[in-house]
Image 1 (cartoon, helix red, strand yellow):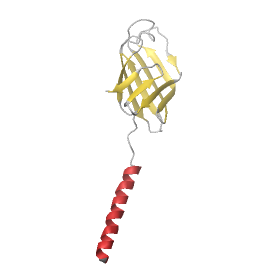
Image 2 (cartoon, one colour; image 1 turned 90 degrees about the vertical axis):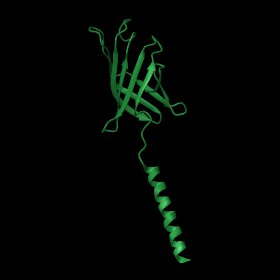
Image 3 (cartoon, helix red, strand yellow; image 1 turned 60 degrees about the horizontal axis):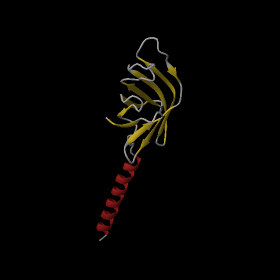
Image 4 (cartoon, helix red, strand yellow; image 1 turned 120 degrees about the vertical axis):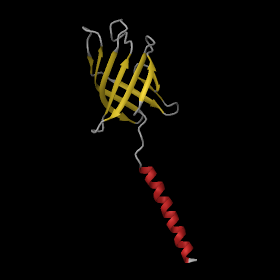
Length: 135
């Protein structure tokens, strides 16, 4: 009888240990992936990706196949890059650079760009209203 009681305690402690390690295991943040969206202004394809840096900050890369607004009305590739922080379901970058792959166009820097993750739909929406889906 004493052996069974000890065995039950050992099994329960093992299950408790397994359960607690899964609670503390690092889960992959929802932003960490490649995303695709459609530009609400001109219908072009936008690709967006995020990567966690060693500093704890996050970097992002944004590629618009035809950044009409950024490129002064022409359908040229537009690129945005920067870093920021994730708080809850929102990524905010205030350190960024946006440019058109066309000589002579201005480079825009350091304005607020945010992306909000929706866990119910596994989608993201950015500050321009573009909805992104996992690639």
